[in-house]
Image 1: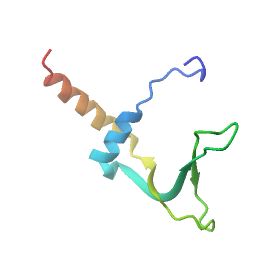
Image 2: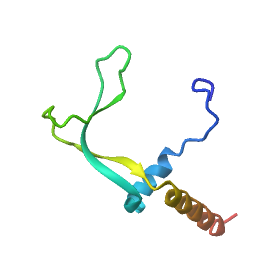
Image 3: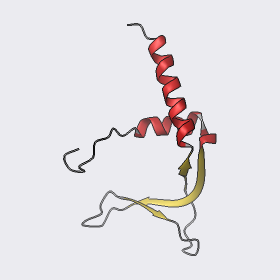
Image 4: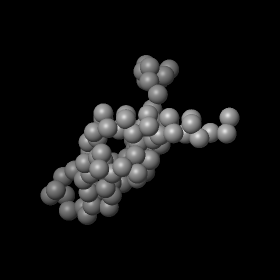
Length: 88
């Protein structure tokens, strides 16, 4: 929050879980992805090559779009289920 000036909670793990459990919520695209290891300013950045003419073979499926309403519904359903089945 201090560095991005954003008031939000990121749910990266939840999105990964949704891709695995409900892939129909996402439109996927095969792309060439790598991690920048040499750049002074970009070291560690994920680099996605969307150019079809570059000659790089796709090595990863990347989620490009999500059905937001259905994703929220799924997350809320899972949290409700977890709350109802917790030991405490």
